[in-house]
Length: 68
Image (cartoon, rainbow, N blue to C red; front, side):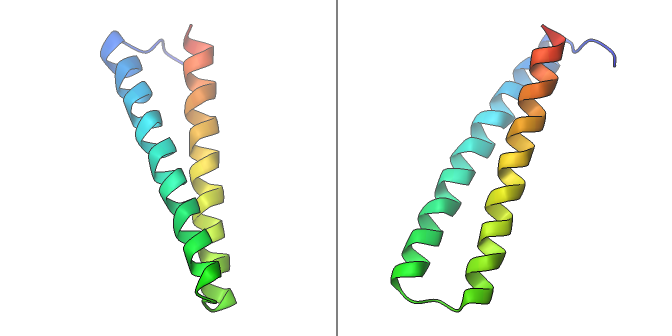
């Protein structure tokens, strides 16, 4: 893998922060949906979104760690 430029590194760091924010928002939506007794299919789909965001966060972290 090629080394990231300074702009690339900063861009990934900013993107990671946004992904983390989004993941927290999705978790909040899941909790609200559970309180509202939303259909289980919807809760499962939201949980998949949360898992995907966690995976993206982990991938970005790995890229940043390898670049240092």
